[in-house]
Length: 458
Image (cartoon, rainbow, N blue to C red):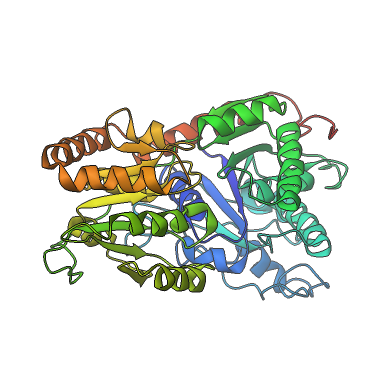
């Protein structure tokens, strides 16, 4: 189905969630759909540079003054800019194209872009793109979240969307509340959009955080028309909570250019054990440091290299010094393929993962892999693409790494299996096709929508 209008909703993100949403948006633009992205200002950079402030906000700025908290110059919002065109071929999401003019234009002098369907009353041509700033944070703040729900509902009605696709439980819950007729002004005279939510993460540690997460899960399960999950365990969890239509999300890593050579890590003949990721509790780097203690007596001693940044940077560097292990923290690196080329073994010590992009990159690089047997990891690696160990077990992790380093035949088999498995992974085109199939199915539903069932949280 062509000509659909899709809205993507996301919160503050620095990982694969935002990149996944940006990939789907770019693919939909290439297919001629109209796309509006709703999210915090810091998420804008994940999308095309000129996927910016919506054209209708700009047009309204010339028609009527802004009101507090809304429109082009509302309190706490950016002043609207000029009409924006979608990404082109100059370093932006590849192939993203516009219609004849490539813009979303508001309705006529009445000023309500929600009527912008065709003709002089307002148009939103196939392939048009826009960004609307909505402050959706990574932690609950009742006042800010209430404002975000109100603004999101108002903007979604203006955009007259067919489908809203929210990424992450917080974004999904706020989109569900914004879409709910009682909270969104009942969508007078128009069909409310279908709601799709992709669940990207497992429950966080901590009793309070887990309780909030369960509330968001129940809200999404009851309100969303379709729920996509990045791993089978999340899919089972959402089904138990009553989600009506649950499917496995397709989350491929973008293809990276082949490295010109291996990165120079100064290992001087010592084997390199590489890990890449955000320095957070979920990634399990504390377990990796404990494992490094168990292999430091090997000769030559492996060099542990960790690339990434995050809130635990100081804690992890202090722990490494206290444990007296040979580890190099590289910070953020933009040459991950070259780092992988230099690695003798890639390690993923996470406590939980869905479809980690870095693991897919390691498979494509043909590296021997040691990873934890959690979430969606075994589905990515298959039965032979990696040595899998329990999460949080330094001895098992160290033992698997030493097996790879001490057994060249095993390392060669793992490397070959990784390349084979990489060839079986879905592509970005597969991910866009899968998402489009969900959008088309929901958009084809006849009759007015109520955006989910009546809300009951038990």
